[in-house]
Image (cartoon, rainbow, N blue to C red; front, side):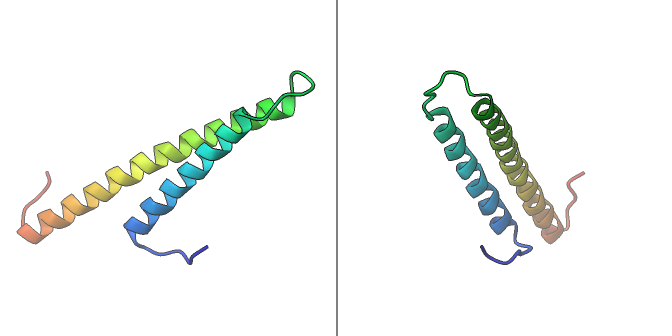
Length: 84
């Protein structure tokens, strides 16, 4: 793991990696064989990992939007304009 930074590119990258990890976990759990029929613990693990994956995807989208907004605002300040 690397030390935290205040770089939005790093944040977006970290969130994207988290999203990919969560996607792999969900796929792995969904592919886990059920030898003895229903497995409540496995079902709960799948549900929780699915929620975490969806949250990571949402964070990824929100980080992209925030980064775009920061870049737009910085561009507006450089030109002396306003976003309003």
